[in-house]
Amino acid sequence: SYDDGNEQGDKALTEHLNQVGYVGSFNIITNGWENLTEAQLANKRQIYAGHEIANHTDTHPIMFDKDKETLIKLGIDENDIPLIRDLV
Image (cartoon, rainbow, N blue to C red; front, top):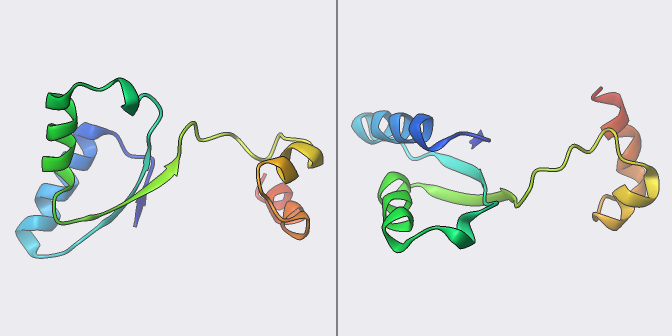
């Protein structure tokens, strides 16, 4: 599983994984994808073909600096908030 990569790095990684016969899971930040051309989307499809893709988030908000109310609005369970604070 791989998070927060960029297209160039992900391309190199998927090429390597393909060569050795492994499948990767890529958690991708999708902010801006709605503005991509069909050619750009086709390029992304080619890079990640045969691998698992997940939407990491649209904007990847920084969670540890959010107040409790905001975290709850973002769908964070109130019991998990101390865990986020401990990451800092």
